[in-house]
Length: 301
Image 1 (cartoon, rainbow, N blue to C red):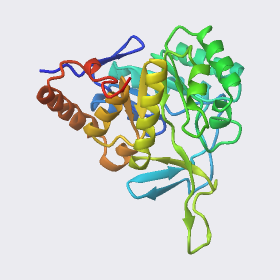
Image 2 (image 1 turned 30 degrees about the horizontal axis):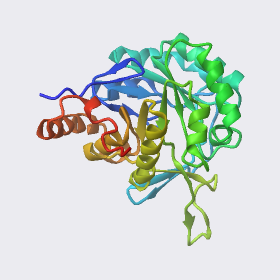
Image 3 (image 1 turned 135 degrees about the vertical axis):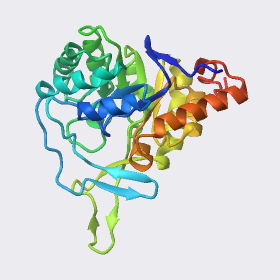
Image 4 (image 1 turned 90 degrees about the vertical axis):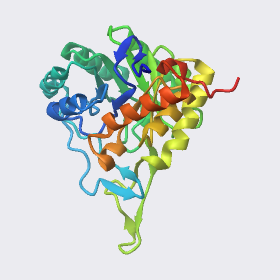
């Protein structure tokens, strides 16, 4: 029988399926449940220095099978998040701490605190497309990205993952600025908007949001392919993965693991177990013994 485990920056994962930041991951009990129901690892909600309410409703709108959201980085603040990680760690599977800030100093404080809480890796949110002063505004400046990644790598021992945005003119330039990161996470949501034609106004209170789900999968596949081909660095694929075939596409484009987000909203918490046996069946039928045999196999040199 095929081995569906994988390794990411030295972290052993029982399968390649992780929970993406931003869904069912602000609460320790929901994170623990997702891990117990098959997720190999969970990425926490992005956490900042202080508590933040986020935007007023509406913060999410359906777009076919996809979603546009502008939650506004709501979170309880780093000092109030340690107990949630303690609870999630009871599942005995890796926890990735996602953090956001506007400069290297705050990013470093958050990362050090996450490490103290016992996370297995840090994910840097350099790509949220709808909050002024954070995310994309930070992640589109290569000099700032380089400063942030280099400073954190000098202060923490756990692996550091840089989550990059598709909403930039040259993602290779940003990836190279973050080259000291242990892996890239590609991609975050695509900046988008929806209009209510009866009220004649944007649906979201923030006007703009981030498009996630099947609509952005081809964009994610493209960026994983290009960045893997150019850098050779380990990549975690995310964006529109709804079934095992989507996951295999990302893996063959160059991802060593993938994250599931919007599909949890549509298909529920059983998606991990279902994808696990479907992936194993595919690998048995196609005679792949290990995940690493599929990583980047579609890349043409």
